[in-house]
Each structure stands twice: as structure tokens, then as C-alpha cells.
Image 1 (cartoon, one colour):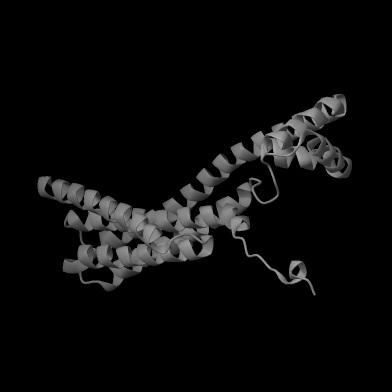
Image 2 (cartoon, helix red, strand yellow):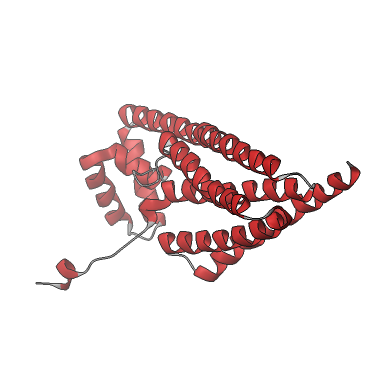
Length: 233
């Protein structure tokens, strides 16, 4: 058996759609809920108020993430549909011009003019619209916008992420809520960065540093604001 038939490649680009939404949701769930809890705790609130604030943040954040992702990704989907309709019309009205357009694209990528014309012709014979969407517009099945998938993924992962600092606040004594939630959340963020890096095939150290740094900064700012308002009250 030739090497062509035994060689297998493993690419992770197909995960882009749901991985982006999942990482955004989980990261936002941990950071926003932990920051909210730390801020309320820093204002010298009682345990009940801290937990109520955390639960409210989890629910409101999940709904907000779902709505925000659906609206933003739907806008992308609408743009893609408009481009697909326009390309379909152009292929129907002037296929020769579209063939020339595809030929130029392949020439710019390094093919000889004659070969570029042949490739464009053969690809258009098989599926002209698909060839133009992929090579002219950069639209493929892998990168297509999926609003419902993005909304559900973001909402679910936000809720999961938010539950970790909430559980830490529930387990911690009142006088240690800030410290316990902050440390636990940074650990959770580091783990999330590692999981995201592994799923996406990216570098581990950079991903972990990125999420923990911004998470720590967000919690520090809200703790400072909480202390300020607590002192005023």
C-alpha cells in the first residue's frame, strides 16, 4: 500500500465555530461571575447577598451570551446568504466572466495561466457555486456561520464556567470568600486555557497566560470598586 493511502492528517480547523463560542462562554462565565462575587464580597456584603448575586450573574449572563451570540452570528449568516445569492445570480448571468475571475485567482496563487484556466473550468463543471464560494469568497462548510449552535454553546459553557466560582463562594467562609474565589477562578481559567489550547492545537503557555492575566485584572478592578463603595456605605 502506498504512503498516499496510509498517511493520515489531523486538522482542528473544523472545530473553529463551536470552539470559539465555547471558549468565549466559559471564559466569560468564570471571569464575570467571579468578578461579581469578589466585588460584592469586597463591599462587605453577607453570604446570602454574595450567593444571590452569583446566581443572578449566572442566569443573566447565560441568557445574554445566548442572545448576543445568536444576533452577531446571525448577522454573519445573513451576509453569507446575500453573497451566495449574488454569486449564484452572477454565475447564471455571465458564466464566462466568472470563469475568468476564478482563473485570475488561481494565477495569483501561483498556477500557470493555461493550468489556471483548466483548473477553473474543471471545478466549475463539477460545482461552480461551491468553487466560487470557497476560492473567491472564502466561504466553506467548515467556516459557515451557525447562529443556533453558537448561541447554545455559549449559553451552556457560560453556565458551566460561572458555576465554578459560585461553588467556591458557597464553600468558602464569609471572611475568605474574596481570596478563595479569586484563587479558585484563576486555577479554573488556567485549566480552561489549557483545554482550549489542546482542543485548538495551539501553544499551552500563551493560552494559559492570556486567560489568567485578564481574569486577574478583572477581579482586581471589581474588588477595588467593591471596597470603595463598601467604605462609602
